[in-house]
Image 1 (cartoon, rainbow, N blue to C red):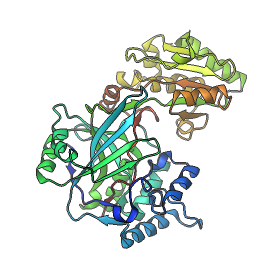
Image 2: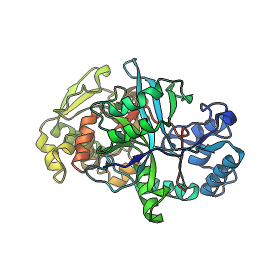
Image 3: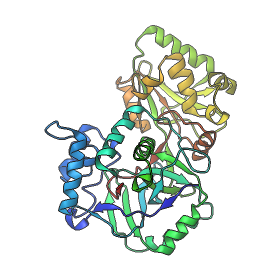
Length: 421
């Protein structure tokens, strides 16, 4: 079972930075250089200076992160809490249907363990490049700067009920991010509430929703230091699977390198052989939810005609994925990867990981624009993977293809940190 504890967090001193709005940032892996420059321009204390270090003199980024973090602590920009606490977070956002929703959860430190039933499970594959970067940053700063986002089962709402009294008060701090998500943060130091949360999650399994590379980093770092200590734990944001604000969105696939007639012929033959091809209206290119059948939308930049592709026979997926579970074979993203990306187009796992020939779009509008402008050769329009399907694949001990899920909103970096010494 997962070991969940309160933490003596390191955090921004609001008297020094004014508010969290200017110092928080999205997770490091969604920030490009122009976005980073915008964040630093808002405040010299923006968290990207340590979580995504890029020294102006071209020096060692990890030394830069360490130097800046220590300077901020000495200057009182960051302060260490004297007593351990949980930190509740409410994120109010606008969903694609236009409705305002709130996702709730809490920050805690969780003992780092190997993956396994009843403990912690991943759901997506990781790559060595990001793991190496995050490990070097952790070694340099000896701090968890960005949380891992994990899910747990709370069928009777015990954890939410324990946190309820604290979240009924004025929040400790608020921050609105660039997507308009309103983040409200509460410190929960009451021993009774902390104990109740611990009981509620005492026999629960945790499913990593976002931050797989960070968890892999924590495992490596814990193993490297050995013995027992602060480094045996990692910062997590925990959210109940039953939380009404939990949303999963799709990530669409954008293809390039399809100019070769032979490649086009292989792609067309595979689509006609394995899928029912149905012309649809542009507004219906993303298929409706139907877990009983694998389906996705398709459009290329030459004809610009929208189609819906539905797998003709589940046995095709079974033949293409013989070493995988039924849960895995039912994934739209897994079937697309096996039959089209790897099968028809011949992309390797390294190609997919390094985005050679395939890239991604978060919204249908963005993917349509990419195709219709000719910026990409074609796009596959995916539907959201239900949380239940994510659980089923994880329970089978398997990891999904990259970008199979997009949990929204992201948990900002900079709300709380977890020192490892």
